Image 1 (cartoon, rainbow, N blue to C red):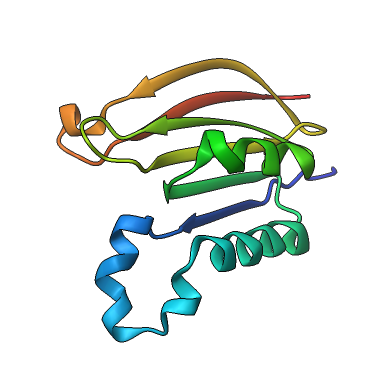
Image 2 (image 1 turned 90 degrees about the horizontal axis):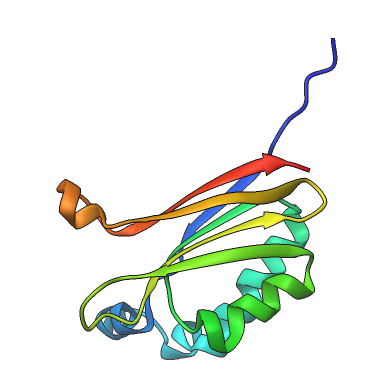
Length: 123
């Protein structure tokens, strides 16, 4: 029978705070938010994934929510607790999936990393 596939694109995008530590080993041009944002959106558009997972993402409300929506993705974001500015974003192609439930998980409470846990249902 027919096998339906789902493609997932996942990146640790390196938070802007974390990028400061890499700057000594890399040309700072490549670490700017504008440069990385443009290239990441290019990757998403080129590979056409069904699901996108972005870790250490910053500027979700100020940029990424709308940018993902503009390329046909719905998304949710879970910011790290405390004084951190980054978090995890899960995005899905709206032609393939619809969000049926969302549950934020504090992974530190489980002995791991923080993130978002989401349940998707095929559209």
